[in-house]
Image 1 (cartoon, rainbow, N blue to C red):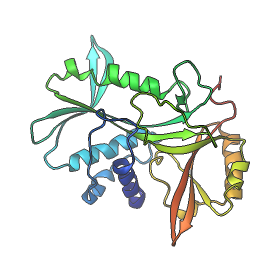
Image 2: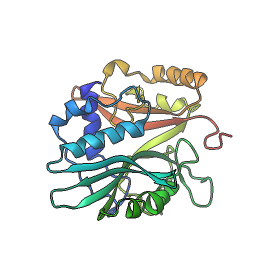
Image 3: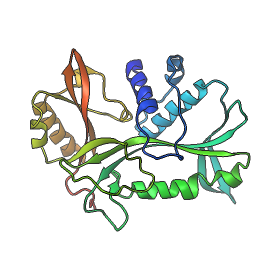
Length: 272
């Protein structure tokens, strides 16, 4: 695994704003340079962004002084039927036992909404911010009440971004529990090729799974606005799956991310 990219992903995990408001997300993790050898065990070959993120959080918890991880990915059964999983149970030196649920999520603000409740939709339209929070509060966190009664603290650690269409009007009311200071990006349809031409002096890079966290550091993958147009066309010709891109500009010899982009198929979210 590329250690520079991993370090950058760790910094993103620690420093990026939470998707959730307090008190759900009062957990603060410290970034530790000594963590890198441990996290080299992360399965980079796995295409799952969520598992990669969970691996980083696992390493960060292990690096916390005095923290003892009691359970990780603990499956919960009811009459031999799996009813859920507890991401982490850990104990601090104070004796406090915490049940921690972790997630990294990316939602797109869709102005027309897909039903009466949901404006913030995942690349898979069945996944919405509102539904995720409802499940988190009503199922995932309460699951430890009976399954692990020693728990006396419950937390959610959710990072990610909300993507808005270009020139979208600001939504006056955000969903309950969505952090107003959340990380923001832009989403466009795959056929909106003119969007890239608005930035002739910038470069673009595809964020390949599982590295959807920090922007790509490998400059050999950076493409001009004309090159990325052709790459997007070819990728959607081969497979009609959403793409995450980073738009970067060189400043004082270093590339700085200007915008995170999410490119979705024509017809999204009505893909059936």
